[in-house]
Picture 1 (cartoon, rainbow, N blue to C red):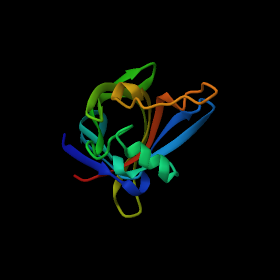
Picture 2 (picture 1 turned 90 degrees about the vertical axis):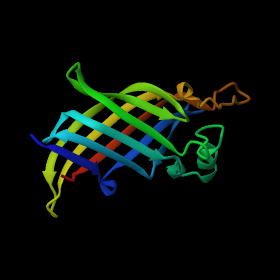
Picture 3 (picture 1 turned 90 degrees about the horizontal axis):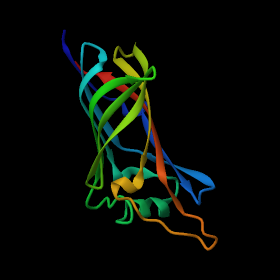
Length: 177
């Protein structure tokens, strides 16, 4: 049994989030710069360790520059003081036939344990001889739990930004050792 180190393949990975706007539609955003490292024993991801994910808050992209600037401000992420979102995985477990990863998520200096659904896509060797592993990740959280409490109410009484945030990732890792 050998320890294997895996790192992110950024060209074949993406992280997105969705939140309600005016409670009538959904806005999608992305983090354009993020990183992930994972250690496994052989190629067994169920016993993975040192699972460390980070996203650069300056890379938030909702396809609207004004909104992105607001998200980076002290009203939301306060990217000047808290430059990254960080997730440290603490272990896999199976629940109702689905794989879940528990871990500690830190946003804006506030840490909470969350769990994400993980679908393992498999392992393959690419045309360049690199061994890759693929995953789909899905989760949700309350933004207010992480100090992202800014909101407003329209004249008609609608809330501008919903509290629940759904996030997902299409992740490809490269075997490094």
